[in-house]
Image (cartoon, rainbow, N blue to C red; front, side, top):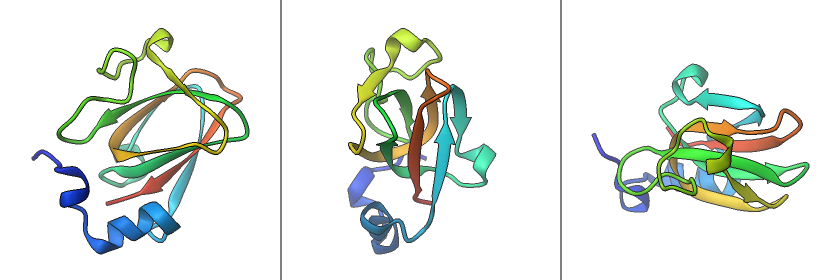
Length: 110
């Protein structure tokens, strides 16, 4: 079932974006992490911490993936760098990072 983004999120999920009330995962690169492996359906935001992060994320539902080609895969050349402290909002069920020294905070949606 496709996710319709902010129009489909519950108020609890929207609060998670702003406040992290549903919790979060600290994910360290490199490689791929799936929401299912963490026991959830998707994350609602990704925040770079500690350094610039090369990351890709697969959209859960409608829209392009967060990747240079618009399609998430495991090719580091397809990563988009996000600066320390920047947040990317969306419903993501798969995250790929290219460097083992990088960290992100992935906010739990559902």
